[in-house]
Image 1 (cartoon, rainbow, N blue to C red):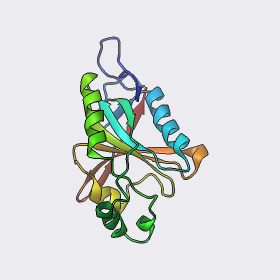
Image 2 (cartoon, rainbow, N blue to C red):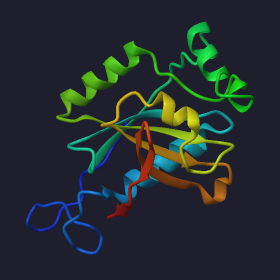
Image 3 (cartoon, rainbow, N blue to C red):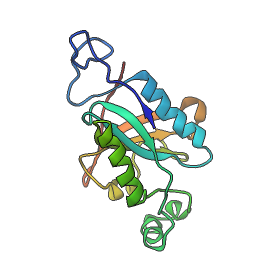
Image 4 (spheres, helix red, strand yellow):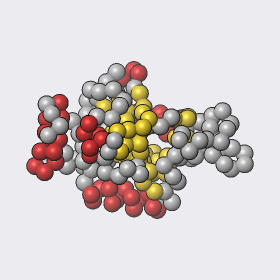
Length: 176
């Protein structure tokens, strides 16, 4: 787990790197946490990285919790991934965190005064936009989806999205 403090102004209110109060539609993330998110995904290569994100609210992520269980290739989940077409038939594409690991991570978040605010995963073969599988398998519309494209490792890219049945919305990132 990697943790970072929320960027704060002298008044104690979150602020952007420009010193303005953030819009509700911006993710305010410390440079350290952003770098750690990218590093986790690059270090996992050639494998996929995935995990959960804790914070005070979904616009202020504070901690990363990489996950290690993956139920993706169990018969139940394999059939679901296979239904998304040839690319998703690759057994190394996709992830499903075991409920016991999610519970353990949520307990750790609670002990730190955090709540679950997002899910992150790497895209090793795709760009940073959500795939059809990402959209269909999103477990909670209130959680943000952080996608880190590492298909070009020297230029890894981070995107943060609100996922819904009708598509996705890209959420601007403000590093501070």
